[in-house]
Image (cartoon, rainbow, N blue to C red; front, side, top):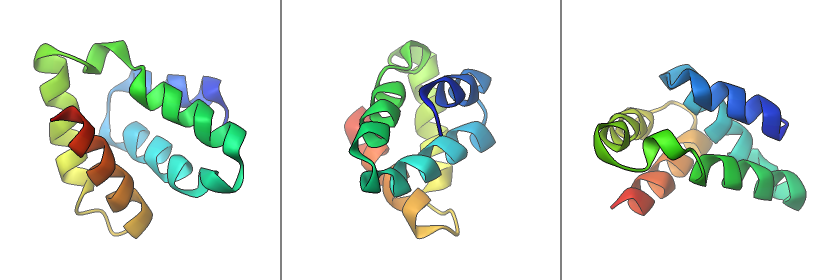
Length: 84
């Protein structure tokens, strides 16, 4: 997944887009450059850093902590812990 794709998926602000980026981030450690790019996109999504938008992200992450994919669950838990 490219940085541009991650930005576009996160801009959708929906569960499917966030899930796709988390799934890509979970398998990205094999390519440190890609992992760093995805990490930056997840950490730098400005609409989700404060206020009600932050709550929106937290709700989506909580939902994804029950995802059938263990990698998505793990990434969601990690991101959720960083919001607190």
